[in-house]
Length: 580
Image 1 (cartoon, rainbow, N blue to C red):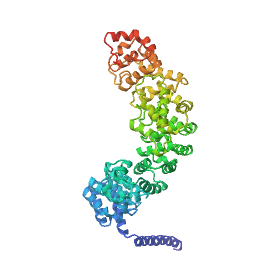
Image 2: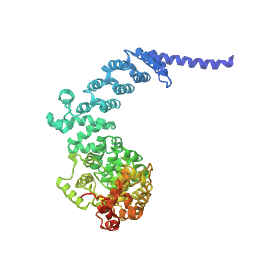
Image 3: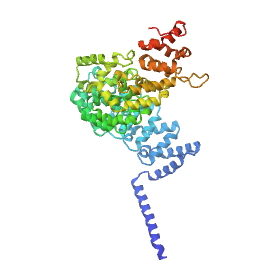
Image 4: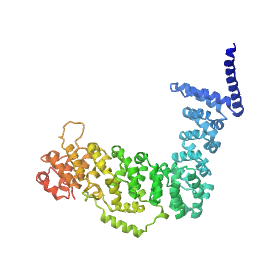
């Protein structure tokens, strides 16, 4: 018996300690017993194999128990999860009842660590009227909530879900105290801050001071991920004076900038920081991208920041060490990726309107007005020099090489002092990236030619890039690539085959035609390996455009090579040449 005494004493102590803990919780928590009941119901309703009707019954029971206490329950660590599950699985009428009960407490709940999840879930399932009502309830609190680590999540969620007018309503509060006090002044027509200031006759200095007082605490707290903040910063930089703009750029030029560049406006801010930041600040940004380059390159907005870095930053050793090294490691994955290929295309053919949309080129060429250092006359001189110097190597007659590309180039290279061609050669050729790129193109030639996105890469590489950037250093490698493409094209035409021949495939036939037109060396290789004595076979369908390209090219050497075989096809009417 004596041997069992310590065991019983230990057990009694544990039971007694548990009872004391329970008693303390009951005194501390107003709805302790209710929380225990809800936790029991939650364990049953969240199982995967539960019948739908049974879950609905449990959800209804839980909501009945919570009625009248939902705002308090939502702030509890455990019960808030029960409430989220109920909102997810309940009927629309029950969801509407929850919405009505929490409506007066939106702002309080939006700043609570646990309740914030309920608020965002309610927003996801809200009707248009409820959504409008919630956004209206934020009026006068947007700036305060954005300074709050938790509250900012709710404002961003509402901003993402709102329509254009609702987004503008939320933004306007950050512009001026007058707009914060008087809703009626707000109009969706004035999308830009400069238009708001002009139309409402606001004092520019007052707007700058108000926005600074809101944005500075947000940046100091490191709340950088939200698109509404990115938009506000872009608008602020359009009106800020030189010292205010420089201060913001300096503050943002850090490794944390990576957290902003996933949005359209965040990408624009990234470009501003690269363009107007000092060499030291650019170095911080680039080092912050270490081990993240692949993810940034594949992102629609982030890839533009990489493009800007490769076009502006003069420290090519740092770029080779951080960015180029990572690009080399994932080269094959990037070649056919819509966004991932763009940094490579920028190095091969800068600011080409074929590879970037007008909006993207405008973003790459944009600057902070108060920080622009070059005058319009200097920009015109730069543009004139670049237009004269710009060439396309073998792609000399390429229609897309317009003066617009050169205009964008003059704006884009505003921040760098090094000669653009020298910078490109150091990043592309001297770093070994070009050699790996050609090898990858040889290995993936057929896949790239048939790909909507890969075809642009293999075309630029096979022609040697703009300004013959890959020549003469890599002439031997380029000849190998030409031979690989020609060998693939030399495969016989298979009747009844599911896979189209390269000469007949939509993407590959057009790419090969462009290569024939713009690269005499490729045209000669292709004719010798794949078409000599076989032109009549390919004189119809998509492939006919490839045969006609041999006579349409500006190269007299190519004309002379094929004239004996191709001209009779034209004379007999089998082959038609494009009218000039």
